[in-house]
Length: 176
Length: 455
Image (cartoon, rainbow over the protein chains, first blue to last red):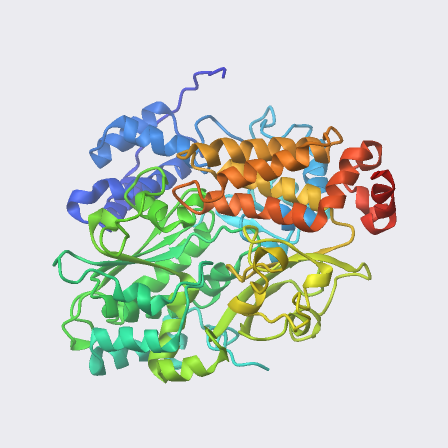
C-alpha cells in the first residue's frame, strides 16, 4: 500500500493533559497501559481526528509503554485514523437493517452531492464519506455517525441540511 | 400490558438525573443489599431468579457469579459488557442513555455480591455520548455516597469507571473485552482459564451484559422467587427486544418472556405489523449471528405449536427449523428483501470484524464474503452453494471464540431455507442486475423459473 507522509502539529494542551491524567487515575497505578484506548480517543479528538506516528510515540511516552504497543492497538481498532481525514466524517452504517431502509441510496446521494468517492476527503478537507459496520441504531435507520453523535432517520433533505450546517460551522462534533 | 421491570420508569421526566431516579425508588437495592444481606445471599437471590445472561448466550447469571474465585485472595472485578454491536441490537444503548442510574445501581449491588472493589463498564467507542452520560451519572452517584469508600457506612468500598472501546465487534466477546480493557488488541483468549479464575489483570472477573446487570436491582428489591414467576419455564423474567427492518414500529420493547411471536409482531402495543402491505418473508430473532427463519416457521414451530419469545421456543427444532433468542435483535424482512444480498451483507460484517487470530475464521469469512458477493452480482457458479456450505462447516467449532460460529450459522441457515433463491441468482444473472431486484419482481413471482430448470 502506498504511504504518504503527513506532518502533524502536536499540541498537548494543559486541558488535554489533565483529562489524560484523570483517565490514567481510573486504573491501578501499575496498570497505566489500560488507559490506552480512552487516551487515544482524547488525543485524536484534540488533533484533527487522526494519529501520526509522532503523536502515537507521545502517547507511549505518557503511558510508559513501548511505541509498538500503541501502533498495534491503533491499527486494530477502526475508530483510530492513521492519516488525515475530512473534518466532517459522515460514517454511514451499511449493515443489513440500515440497508433495508435505503442507506445505500443515501450514500450514493451524499457522495454525488459532495463530488467524492467513499473514503476520499473533499479537496478542501471538509467532508469525507465512509461506510462502517453496525452502529447499534437499527431501529432508527438509515443513520450515520458524525463526531460523537448519531444522526438518525436520515433522508436526502436531512443530508442537505447537515452539509449546510457543517459548512456554516454550526455542528457540534464532540461532547467535552 | 405485560410487566415492565427495566423500562417501567423510563418515561418519568428527568429520570436521567440522580435526584429524580432516587425520588422514584432508585438505589433501594443497594441499601437493602448492603444493610441486610450478605454477598452470598445476593448471589443466591440471583440464582433463584433464574436470570440468564442477556448478551446472547443465555448462561444463568447466578451460576456465573458463583464460579468467581474467592479463595485466592486476589482483587475481584465486575465488568459490564456494554460493547453492544451485534447487528440488529440496540437495547443496551437505550437503557444507558435514558436511565443510566439503573445500570449503575445494578453495578453496585452486583459488585457487592462478588466482593469486587473496582469495577468497569466497557462501552463501545461509537456510543461516545452515552459514555459521557454514564460518566456524569457515576459522578452523581459518588457525590451521593453510593460509590467510594465505606458506602452507606457498611464498610464496603467500590470504585466504578467507564472505559471505551474503539470500534471492534470482537470486544463483545468477554475475553477480548478484557484484553481491550488492558489496553491491547481485542484478541480473544483461550479458555480455560475462565475469567472467573483469571480475567482482568489475571484477577478473578465476571463479565455481564448491561441488561443482565440492570435486572439485578429489581431481583434484590422483590426477591429472586418473584422474578422467577415472570416468564415461562426456564426463560424467566423480561427481555428487551430491539426491533428493526420492515415493521411499523421499530424500537426497543420490554416483553415478558413467553409472549407469542405473532402477538409481538402484530399487536399495536409492540411492532404493529409490517411497515407496508408487502408480506412477511423472513425474520432473524436474535441478532445477525442466529439462523434466519422463513415465513412458515415464524409464528409456528415445525410441530405446529405457537412460536413464543423464549429461549426454548425460538430454538425449538434445533437449527433445522428453529433459531435462537440470542441478544434479542429482531430483524424483519418483507418480500422485497433479497436473502442472498442480506447474507452477503452479514458475511462482509463478520469478515470485517474477525480479529484474525484463527485461520478458519480469518480466511473463511473472507471466502464466504467473496463467494456471496459474486453470486449476488451475477457471477455465481452452480457449485458455489456447496462451496459455501463446505467453508462454513470448516469454520464452525474450529475457532477460539464464537465469532466463527456466528459467521457460519447465518450462511448455513440462509441456504437451508432459501436454497432456491441462491439458485435463481446463479441461473438468471440478468434478472438480478439491479441492487433492489426483488422490489419490482419479488422472488415469489419468479420462483417457478428455478424449479423448471431442474432436470
